[in-house]
Amino acid sequence: MTHDELRRCRDCRRYTFGEVCPACGAPTGNPHPARWSPEDRYARYRRALLAEAAREGRGTAGTTAPASEEPEQH
Ligand SMILES: [Zn+2]
Image (tube, rainbow, N blue to C red; front, side, top):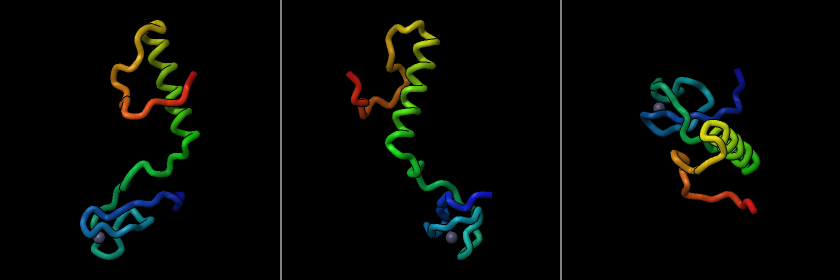
């Protein structure tokens, strides 16, 4: 088990690396997918684009993608 994944208690909001909060014993979960580097994000976005292009035959993209931020593509 890798311990570089930060989790957070859903009860007392305490950050921990364990699956159970050491303070109150409540189950913990991912507070955020915050371990993404920009590279990861672009890679993931590119993969999504590729998958969508393959599915739709390189037609209109951007169906279910969270288009709040646009990648810097030219
Ligand atoms: Zn707790």
